[in-house]
Figure 1: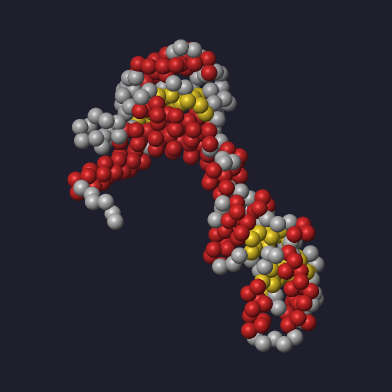
Figure 2 (figure 1 turned 180 degrees about the vertical axis):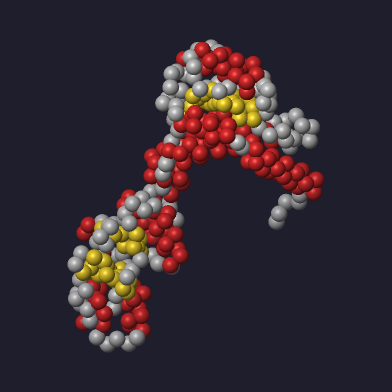
Amino acid sequence: MNAPFHDPDLAAGRRVLEIEAAGLSAMASSLDGSFAAAVLLLSRATGRVVVSGMGKSGHVARKVAATFASTGTPAQFVHPGEASHGDLGMIVAGDAVLAISNSGETSELSDLVAHTRRFALPLISISGRAGSTLARAADVSLVLPDVPEACPHGLAPTTSTTLQLALGDALAVALLERRGFTAADFRVFHPGGKLGVQLQRVRDLMHAGEAVPIGAPEMRMDAALVLMTAKRLGCLGVVSENRLVGIITDGDLRRAMDAGTADLLSRPAAAVMTQHPLTIGPDALAAEALRIMNERSITTLFVVDAAGAPVGLLHVHDLLRAGVA
């Protein structure tokens, strides 16, 4: 039974989301050449992108740094308070700095900003005021649109932090696309968890070598059945001149028996097989193999190389064991 809800609570929740959504829309419309300049400046950094902020902006900065790092842009978060007590040594030649402050007047950032000016390090700011101290000091200033906070008193950072976070995501994704960062690259930085599983390649999960049931078109069906039973994968690949030309599945056998084929066991595999079976390449994502299996209601998928030669076989149970399905 659903718990009772209070109508004003629901209205408040919707109002917050609508205010923040309107803020995001306004920011998307206001993006200009400064954003492109920021992406270019960050892409030229030979070291790390150092992201910093204080308070709520600091929490956002940590997440932005993590997003950069996981999408191919080396990055780290430096706390502005700690920077003033030795951590400025983490920020060296080749680095670029992204400083986040809604007011643009956060005093804790002053030493970090001075450090970038002293050593000619690129500085990009995200702030809520174009004329703020931080915005004027930056090489590139990204200014959030003047939109209301979702807090009814206009005090708690709500819309502003949502915009900061979204702008950080926009920078990270623009850098990802500029660098040509691929799903294969993504897997290198995400080997664990559900995401790492989804990014596994077919070659990581497929059966290969002697485990793959393969026969010639002229193989008699009695021998084909013995081979299918021994390999225990529910199918047989039919190969001619080193190319996969057909597949025999449990379904093909049932259809042949339903048709009353009296000489089924003495017939050649070519007479029973399904021609032009679905296949997948070894470098495809395992998630793509699962999508094909689900869409076509099949449980096995032969893996072939560029020349059409079978190099493996993937069963839906392999995907289930790996956690892909």
